[in-house]
Length: 362
Image 1 (cartoon, one colour):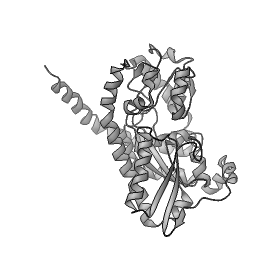
Image 2 (spheres, rainbow, N blue to C red):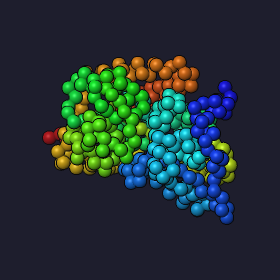
Image 3 (cartoon, helix red, strand yellow):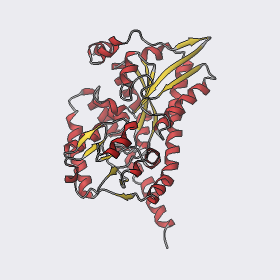
Image 4 (tube, rainbow, N blue to C red):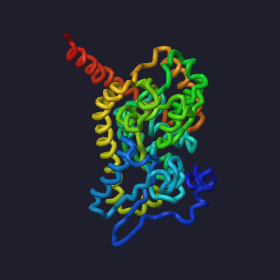
């Protein structure tokens, strides 16, 4: 397939036609500025943190010769419009969660999270040492993008609810916010699934427009204030065991950059992933304690509910296997997952279990 031809004939073609000219980096006295649109309101823990780390790292690593002008949703385009804006050239790059864009291609789910997928470490293993980045770029070329991982939220919570979930039947008719393929899984269980930008979630939960939602984890959820309007918090979820964040640069813009500036973006995205994930994991425990002190009840789904998640997840994943690139991405990802789990289950997982048993003994 001629991927550029695909782009011209896709739904994105309308967006591209609407853009008057391809946005090239701003050049002034040898300096280059890239306009980066994001899906995160300013100050959002974890997510805007990652975008800010990337922004600052590129500016500092280049000694000011390559800078990023970061835009929040609404400052140039909406939260879910960043993909089309960069693909068409209306903006130079985006920072977002690629599973927002499964409507463009279902394989984008793998670069954030898929149901019963990899932990943050396992996703990183696949991305950098199992062919994931190459597949990300192959996918991005269809839409004129150069793609990178640029952050990871770690394991995301099962979500905020107004009432406890006693069985899978309790999802039937539930108005719930969950993006990506995880949302399609809840749809199989009868939920009325909605994908609402992060900046609108508090109001939607508070007003009753939503019965529940998933967001990130304690550090981010506390700052969003969900504990003020819901008190039942399921701390483990099936849908995002280690959610990657992504940066993508318009491919024409990226190719115009010097090799040094291209490498700065490459290495800044890697550093962002490491630093932001560590910050998140360092803060989740204390944030969870504060949530509990405010009356939040932490819970886990029953095995029966997990089994229902699993059965519905298999259906959702299999529905996309007719797409050749999705199928290759799934095969690559699951091969890496099998390899990672073989060791992690016998080392890290067992060690943590034994460490906590010994520490708490007596």
